[in-house]
Image 1 (spheres, rainbow, N blue to C red):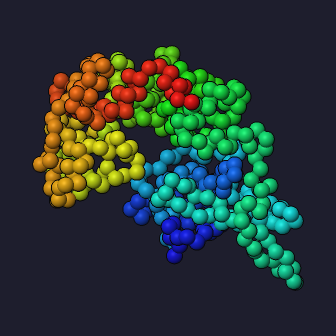
Image 2 (cartoon, rainbow, N blue to C red; image 1 turned 30 degrees about the horizontal axis):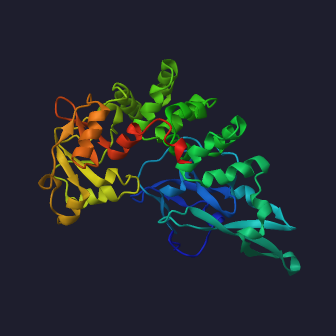
Image 3 (spheres, rainbow, N blue to C red; image 1 turned 45 degrees about the vertical axis):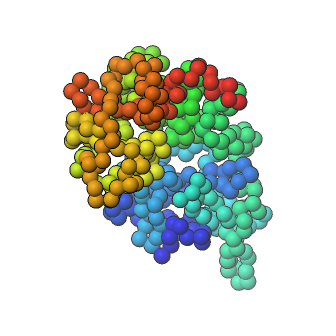
Length: 402
């Protein structure tokens, strides 16, 4: 059995044909290939796996992988993006590297080392090369990835863009405006949708619109779906009405409904600041359940600072809003205690409250977030302190950080 946390390398060819399993262990497809992206001066990164799911060739991001063993590749969570895989400039498939000639020897396999619980992605650590033997038999010898630099050559243009992909989204957003239009276009083609969404969230709306110019409606819609809803709504609000309507027609059902709801609010109000998807629980949920929710890697640190307690349903607009519980209170309570017994504050604001008053409320009471409720007392969203800072800082503050 091979564990994903094993220090031993996993060979790419051994992954082919393994079952793709959801979080409950049910098979949903089979693994076909490994997607590799060269990284200047660093080991090539594994961005994800290709899988055959319901006769569709789809991409599974490396961050979604929870475990690899003899039974298959298990995912974190049960949702799968069924968009067909489109190979990006500079990316290579492991199968395309097999049989490549390197100094008269053939590539037989690619050695991978996974690091799912750290900031590092899966990486290529070695390359298995053929070694001639007597009687025409061949065996493999694994060499360090640095011993075969020609295998990772992506050409001059992509070679200059590749190091940018390793920057933090904030740093990359600052760099984008210094690139020529051609280099900027090459970079956006090389970034995957999630990476591009992260960069857009660090830019002003004007810069966002410029960066997306020339992209297909389908690609822009895919990127917007990866953005935080409040950031996506701000971007859509800057676009011409016809473009906005076209994108909302391409974006899938629930996501489009959330964005349409956010677009109804003025951008300078609480409704325009809020995220519609905070951590929401019913009063009968236990502290153990609450802690499990805020520990999830997809929950940002500022959103994990508190949970919102509401009567069912727990999707916005919810049932009646009951209050907020901070994570420190959760840590002090027994796991079996219900969150309804732990409510610390029932304060909320209306969607129409001006953003300046929201900022004053957060500062006056040293809050990290605020509930936003409609006239019926239903939770429609939440505002976090980072949302307010981003809006109240002067225009161009990001550029002055360089």
